[in-house]
Length: 611
Ligand SMILES: Nc1ncnc2c1ncn2[C@@H]1O[C@H](COP(=O)(O)OP(=O)(O)OP(=O)(O)O)[C@@H](O)[C@H]1O
Ligand SMILES: [Mg+2]
Image (cartoon, rainbow, N blue to C red; front, side, top):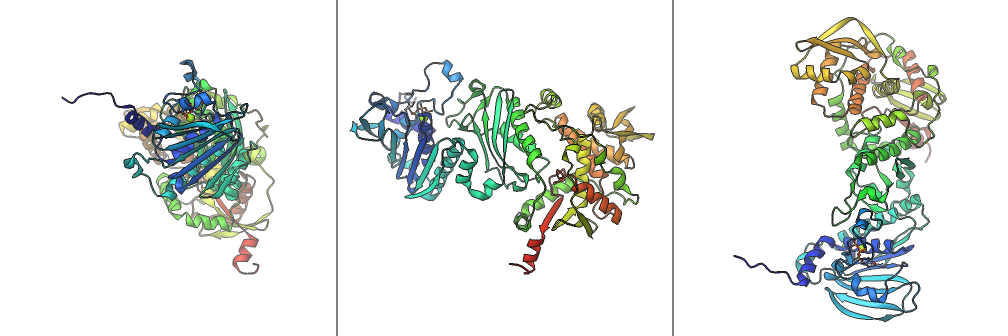
C-alpha cells in the first residue's frame, strides 16, 4: 500500500503556483491587478524577452508597510478579505491572497515599496519562496515589483513556454485589456526597451481604445450607455459594417474586471443578429456594472469566470444596450471601394453566408406579372410619427417580452415612421441581371440587390405592424395534411402563428386548416408554405420571439420579389424611392448587405481620371 504523507511546503507551494502562474502574462495580470487595487493612477509595465527573463510593474498606489511585506508573499495572505461575508461582495480584483506567494514560488522577486506617509521605503527579495533580503531603501511612493527568471526552479514548466515573441504578445494582450478596463489609470507598456503603449488616464474609454487599437478600429465604434434594473451597461460597439471574422475583438468588463461571459456574448450577438452577415461577429468594449452581491467571482482560480445571480437580467441589459445603440446610430450605408475590396478579401465568409442563405431561402416561385411591389411595399406617408424613445428604460412591451420568455427576447423594431428621411435626388439607371438595380444618387452609384432589399423591407413591416400581423381571410379555407409530428408542432404553436398572421386550426387526423394568412402572402402556395413552417416548428427549440422572427423571415422571403423576376421601370423607380427613404434598410434579414455604393471620386480614380 502506498504511504500517504503531507507534502513539504515548497512542493505544495509549487503545485499551488501552477494554478495562478501559467506564463509571464499571468504574472503581469496579477501584478497589474494588485496595482489597480492599490488605487494607482499611473502604472508602468516593462518586460524583456517576452517577460521570461524580466518583468517590472511600477505603480503610485498605497504601497505596503514594512511589517506586512513578508506576509504579502505568504499563501492566503490578503488585505482584501476579512470575513466570510466579504466573499459575497468582492469589490477588488484580488481576493484569494495567492498571487504574490505563487509568483515568488516560481521566480526571483524583488519589491521596492513605500506608502505615501512614510519617508523610507523597503526593499525585499524572495527567490523560489525563500526570503533573501529585507532592508531600508530610498524609493518613490508606491510599489515596484520586478520578477526575473520565471520557472528557474521548475524546468519542466519552463519547457512549456512558447517563443519569447509569443509570450510577449500574450503579455501585451493582458496590458491592452487592463488599459481598456481602467481608462482612469494612465498605463505605459515598454517591451524590450521600446514604449509600445501609453494611455492618458483621463477616464475616456474611447481614448484608451484608440491608444490600444488605433484609429481605424476606433472610427468604427459608437457609444452606448444603458441602465436596466440596477445593471449599467456602457461602452463602445463596432458598427455592423465593421463586423469581424471571429470574437477576438469582443471585450467585456464586469465591475472593472475582464471576464468571459457567455451570457453577455450571446446578448451582444443576438442584438446584432439581423444586421451582420452570418459567420461574422460584432466587436465591442463593454463595461457591465452590477451591484457587487449580484456576481460570484470566486468560481475559478483565474478569476475570469463569473456567475450571475440572475443571468437573464444581465442578458437583457446587454441586449438592450446594444440594440438601442445600433438601431439609433447605424445610419446609411457607406460602403466605398475600399470596403468593397475588403469584402473581396472576405470571400470565404461571403461563401459561407450564401450557403446558409440558400438553406434558409425559399424555392424560386413562379414569376409575377402584376404590379406587385406597389401593392406590397410599406406606405411611409400613412404611418403616424411615433415619438423617439428617450427614456433609457425599455418600453413596457419590451419588458413584458423580457419577463415572459427565457433567453433571447423580441425587441419591437423602431416604428417605420421614425426612420423616414427625405428621399435624396436619384435616378434609376437600370437593372443588371434582373437582380441588381443601378442608381445614380448624389454623386454616387448605388447597386441594390432587389430581392434582399425588398425582403428586408417586408420583414421590417411585419415586425413593426401592430400585433397580430395584418392578415386576410382566405376565400376558401385550405386544408394541408402533415406528418403527425409536424401536425402537432403546428397546432401547439397556433398562438405564435396567429401573432405572425396565420390562422391555422385542427382539421383532425393529421390535417390542419388554414383560414387566414398575412396579406402579403395571399397569392402564395399555401400548402408549400405550411409544410415549410411545420418542418421548422418541429425541429426548432427556439424560444417564442425567435420563432416569430423565423416566420417573419420566411414570410418576407416568400413575398419578396426574386432575383430574375421582371420588373418595370416604373416599379423600380417606386421601389428605390421607398428604399432610400428608409436608411435603416441596410442588410437583408439574413445579414447580407442590400446596397453597396461607389462614389464618383472612387470611380474616377479607378479610371485614372484623377489620382
Ligand atoms: N502593488 C501593490 N500595492 C500595494 N499593496 C499590494 C500590492 N501588491 C500586493 N499588495 C498587497 O499584498 C497582498 C497580497 O497580494 P496578492 O496578489 O498575493 O493577493 P490578493 O491581491 O489579495 O489576492 P489575489 O491572490 O486574488 O490576487 C494584497 O492583499 C495587498 O495588500
Ligand atoms: Mg492580487
